[in-house]
Length: 572
Image 1 (spheres, rainbow, N blue to C red):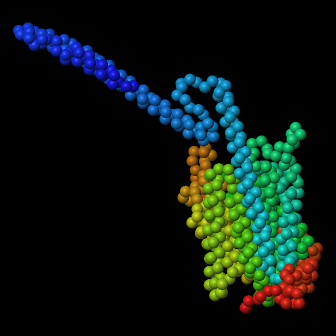
Image 2 (spheres, rainbow, N blue to C red; image 1 turned 30 degrees about the horizontal axis):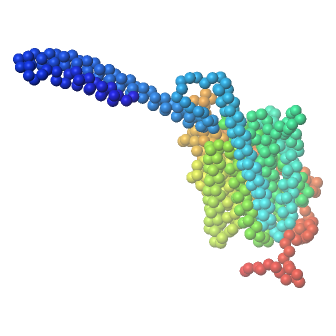
Image 3 (cartoon, rainbow, N blue to C red; image 1 turned 90 degrees about the horizontal axis):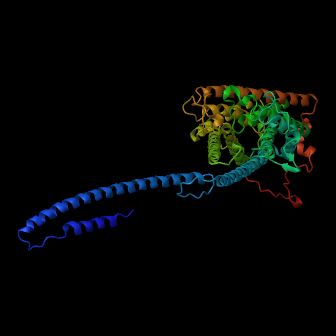
């Protein structure tokens, strides 16, 4: 409000009525009386002016008060606009004090629901892209396994090793489809009696038919069953492939195909049901087991089965009499396989967030990737240095297995440890791998690719490390599956004291359970095959090479060109 005109009017009235001379200077004796009268009149006018100025001051105070209320109202409107922007809603804000009528409110409510539905759908699409990509990366790990195992074995069996890896994926897929998924996840996180799933065999019930249409998603779900089936299938077949390396160069191909089917259809799915499928281990001691991406569920399970297989099969003929004859035939394949596995591990570990529709989950995936990288690099270098200290020569194969040992060691706890802890986990994992490898050699257990030290021993270490190095405050609070948050009290008022101790006990039970389950059933399967004469190839086939005796063409590599000249340049 502009007060200037009011003040100017007051000044004009004062001048005309008080300050303008009213007594002529020539009045002589009457001048004093006139001046006295003027003074009395001026006093009265001044009194009126003071009253008017008081009114002006009151008016100024009212205007200031109104300005403050207007500023407060504008701040409230700005805050409301900020909140509405977070829901992607556009609301026209006015200074009117009238209430929104019912029709306008319903329109805004319907629009908000539509925006929320669109946002939910976009989140589901982001999850699907992420899980499909990571599942494909995990599937690509089979190429790494094939290259690594082939390079570690002798050239006369290279084609057979490649075939077993491919058959493993195909047969394992059928086993996972027929009954594996049903046993592991068929009861939607509530296995019968906490033991095993009993529904969705052969993917039945994945789709819902309603009014002549197909509904791909269950109510309130962002992800389809087919998406989850695909990602978990990649893990299942990876676990079965671990066994292939331990029994390489002497197992019959049909027998291994049978075991791969048994592993993917029964042994692994039951472990998955008890753990990731919501079974009894997931609720043990209130905090449950902790295995974010599969150090125990996949690697320990597969590594234990590999140990059972290699012990029942026995060593390759002549393995301990002429060790140099069993050196890897192609280190380039070993290195290529290692890099392929390392690359695929970025689907294996970060992909185990199982979603990527918000910033918090994205940050967790990044943390997992960083931890995986640090542990792999640390373990690789440490094993490389250990081998150099023992042999006084560079051991590329040791470097490769050290990298894999570091990856397995951090997989269980990659989502609940800090970077420096991942470094320590990889460091210890290197010693675990090297020690286990030397113990197997001393015990004359023939493991052509060191599958047991890498997957079983480092897998067990990883399960302990996930609790020991949990990033919960101090040694008492425990995060585990909660990732960024701690396990809470029953009344949700604070972090659960003693949770780390419960978590460590749960891990001990988890490790023992997996070893007993996988080891028992694998041993039974291999012993039955051995007793029936179906397990191992003959000594003659071993000496000649499985490729020569059982494959067409009989060689994995064609080393001679036309006229018998070699196409390969051999370096000294």
